[in-house]
Length: 280
Image (cartoon, rainbow, N blue to C red; front, side, top):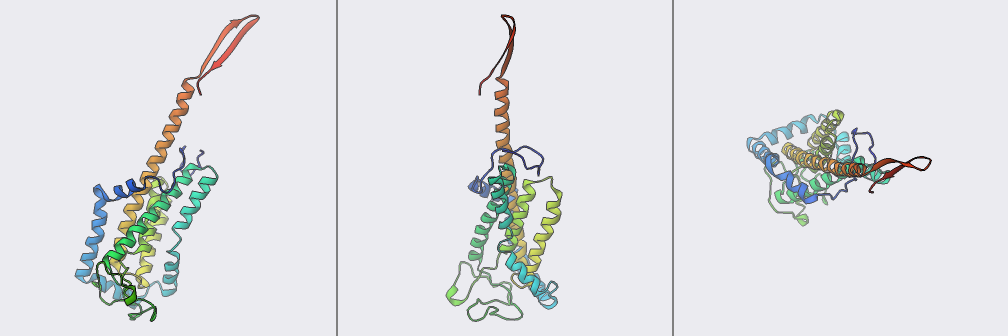
C-alpha cells in the first residue's frame, strides 16, 4: 500500500467500514466519553425546564435570520452530504491502492452509520414533536405529521404513524451525522488544522439552519452535536490507531526480512566470488 501524502506518513493495509464496529461503539460510551451523552440529556432537561428552548424557538420564528430557502437547502443536503465524501474516499483508496484514504473513508462511513442508527433509536425512544412551523400544527398538510407549541411535548416509546404523531425530533439527526463525519476526519487527521477550521463551523451552521427552519428545538441540536462529536471522534481515533498499527506490523516484517539477508565475498579460482543469501 502507498501513502497518499495527505498525512505525510506510511500507512498499512486499508481498513473497511465494518472494522472493529462493536468495539468502537463501546469505546464511544465508556470513560469520559459518557459525559457527552449525559451532557446532551442534561442540556435538554435544563433548556426545557427553564423555558430557554421555547424562548429560543420564538426568537428564530420571529427573526428567521437565515431564511427558509437556505434552511430547506440544508435540510435536503443533510440527508447525503456526509456520506458522499466518505464513500468517495473509501472507493478511491480501495481502487487506487491508497490505504490512508481508504481507511479515512471507512472511518467516516462507520461514524455516520453508527450515529445514524443510535440517533434514530433515541428519536423513537424519546418521542418528541417538532416545533411549529409558521404557526402551523400540520405543516406538511393532512398527510403530514403534527407539530407542537410545547417544548416538553415528549411521549416516550410512542411512534403512532396512523395518528400522524411522528415524534422523531430529539436529537437532531442532521446535526449528529454532520458532527460525526467532521469529528471522525479531525481525529483521523489530527495535524490538518483546516479540517477543524472549516468542518466545525459548517457543522454548527447545519444545526443553526435546523432551528431556524423550525425542524428542531435548540436542545435537539445540542444533544445531536454532542452525540455526533463523541462517536465520530472516537471512531476516527480508533481507525487511525489501528491503521498505523497495521503499518507498523508491515514495516517490522519488512525490516525482519532485511535483517535476514546476508552478503559474503570469498576467493575463487581466478578471482573473487560474491554471494547474497536471505530468507523471504
